[in-house]
Image (cartoon, rainbow, N blue to C red; front, side):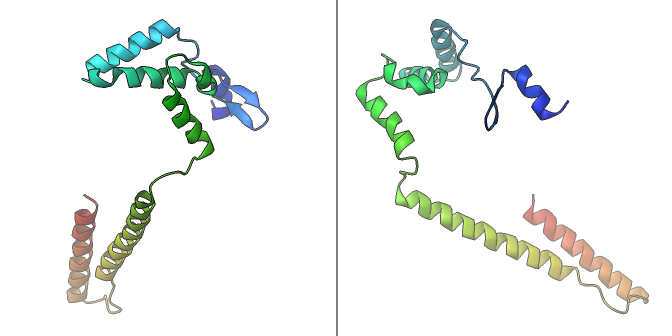
Length: 151
């Protein structure tokens, strides 16, 4: 079965842009949802943040109507509004860290490619026994180098 054929079975509905998957929390009653949150918190040792988890579950159940939830105070509503209106409002240091890590990942990839490919160079005269042995040693060094980087 193809993915578009599965979407109606998952509760999806067709919109102008394609299928939209239905939120599985919309059909859970509020009492059951809060009980599930408390059980989850107790199972994972998160008793100290149960009120936050309950608020998060209620917002996840109906994200468009968070303004009408009586469990949220005004500070919560302000934070949720800013999530929509100022989506990229993050600390400058976070962007700086992401940028530096991206550069470091690119450099590491170049180093690995250079190291592995430089060890695997074939000689033009591969007819002799000695040349074949040298090539085998180079290939094994390349494999060991590859395993060190990717393990």
